[in-house]
Image (tube, rainbow, N blue to C red; front, side, top):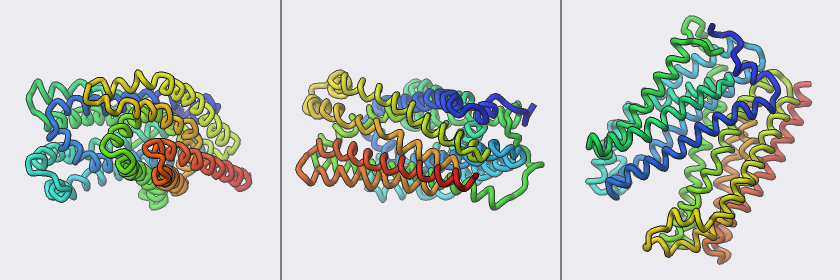
Length: 455
């Protein structure tokens, strides 16, 4: 059955507008469950006390980096596969998938080999006290050993997205995150493993998800992609094609984390520790609004990739503009809801008496900061389209410009102009608007150039 025209491939090669909807909805659901897991994980670990939270916090940027590398590799594989599906190059599709799996194996083995021997020294360098270093090291060791699972899951997910199988890509994400939510309290409290229990829960969830993806790709073999070493033909061109999109996608995720670091510094400058508390709370709510855009972006990469492989710029442009339109309409609803119910949302973070001091600032933040979501689709869909056509470096430039240059730059400027915390929110909104307009303009110019080149 493997290699036959699957429903996902038919969707990719069909009406681009229908393809955007059919592929984005499952991805939105999967990413929403992942976001809920991240919140739940923090809640379960917080019950162990501040040292445990600090230990998880120490490893968080490292784990974020690992996931960024893995997710980037997945995006690279997704884009390369979608373009070859559009070009009706079945042999190329299979060869890309084998290259991606081998890359995931190499990266998954390299991470623990490089990091395990020195991880405790790294935590000491960060200035953590010895008790926290011990907790963080025990937690990190479990997840570093399981790094291959994290990489394989992201690459496998990218392969499924690339051939338009968004439903199974969603199922893998929901399965992993859902299992983790259930297993966390069992391993942490019922089995009394403490913070290491949280790591075991994550490792077991990743392993079970990996087994499902491996079953679909290697045993059931009902995917369009056929992964066999028999058909493997080593190719520098394919390797470069995957990495040209994959590495910039990884760096884009890392640049967003770096931007968050600087925005936290600006918030401290404007409002001290309370300023950071307000910013992180408002940002957490706002990030829920990013989920639909991320789902739409994943679909846009696959659909524009297939249209580009087909050399059909009309389909490419239709998918790109339709994704922006739908994402904008969704965000209009999200932003209206957050602003209308700002006092009620703020209560979730300020119900304790000690937190009342930040309540009014938080309400103010929730009525300003989410506005930046409105124009985010214009920039993020352009980045996704660049990934789809295999020009990952353009996507990276756009992301760095939007996050590190515009958002951080305007926030810092407005705070220095004496606008206080309000300057942080306004800076992020204005910076994002400028970047969105410039990014969208670049996207339209690039599509016009493609139309001339592919005539």
